[in-house]
Length: 61
Image (cartoon, rainbow, N blue to C red; front, side, top):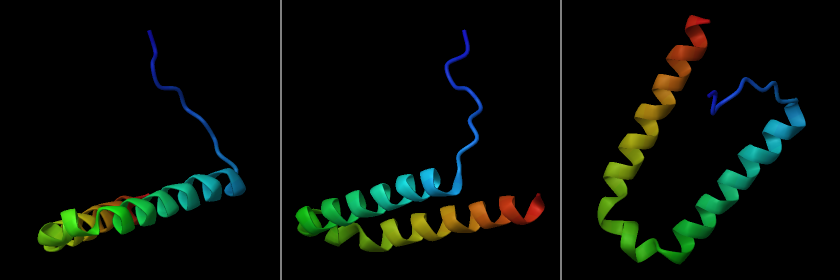
């Protein structure tokens, strides 16, 4: 059984997914800002590390 399948997204479909995740992140951050405040360094570090991993993978292609 194949759970995940390969899908080719157009530029505007990918843009919709990116904007929706960005806006959901803003909503969660504004609603739970006091909860995430003690962990802001950890969250920023994880975000930067994931960004670097994505950049390295993109540059290797």
